[in-house]
Image (cartoon, rainbow, N blue to C red; front, side, top):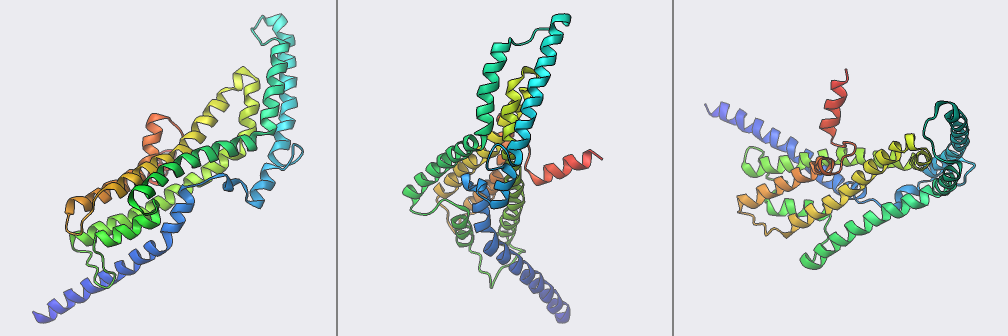
Amino acid sequence: MESSQNITQIIIDTVNTIFENLFSSIDNNLYSLLDELTFINSDILTDKYFEDILGTSSSSGILLIANTLLFAFILYYSIKYLLSHLTYDRIDKPSSFFIKMVLYAICMNSSFFIVELFIDLISYISLFIRSIGEDLFQESICFSSLITNINTNISVDTSALNIFTIDGLIKGILSMSLLNLVFTYSLRYIFIKVFVIITPFAFLSLILSNTSWFFKAWIKNLFSLLFIQIIVSIILLLMFSVDFSNTDLFSKFIYVGGMYGLIRANSLVRDFIGGVSTTVAQSVKSFTNLK
């Protein structure tokens, strides 16, 4: 009997040790990465290889392709305008087309400067929200501070973690939620870069009325991806505003709810604004349904 109890205790200790190492690794490596992935600014455009893709002038990179397509748009309009005299289709007047072409060509060649201002605007708004929390609570409103608070308020001692208790279970949920957030916001980071790259084509599409839908889809998706960090800032601010206690089970579940809210931030923005999904589980499910 005593032997079986010893075996059971050895198994429990082994499981706890495994989870101790896992949670410690997540906490020590993910929090700073999460801050970098979530709270982005125009620095996202300063990567050397990324700048080469974008192009430093109208004769290089993506801008070269966009300017080449501009001539294709002009040719398309010219042919369509000539045919309109035979088909009686409604089409923009040449003067109207010329004004739009010049205006959007300028925007197209200045597109990366425009999108840089747009990204920084969202960044300043999220920074302002977090600075309010820093003034109120005298601590940085970020994932680094959040993980410190989680480990403090849930009373997790890395040398005495018991995954089979409520505190251990909550700690496990929160740590795995952080891992989920890294995948989700990594996907968001990549999508933002993708939509930045196609910015010139978005402005180019405004020249013709039957291609302007591309710009509308582009701006909606890019705005929704950037707007997420404002929602994340608000959720973090609310999480830091709660008076947590080591012995208060209610406050611990508020932490779990807050982490779930951070994971679902993309879905919330998509419900209100629309846009692309960066939720890893949902993206995998959508990919599976395509098979």
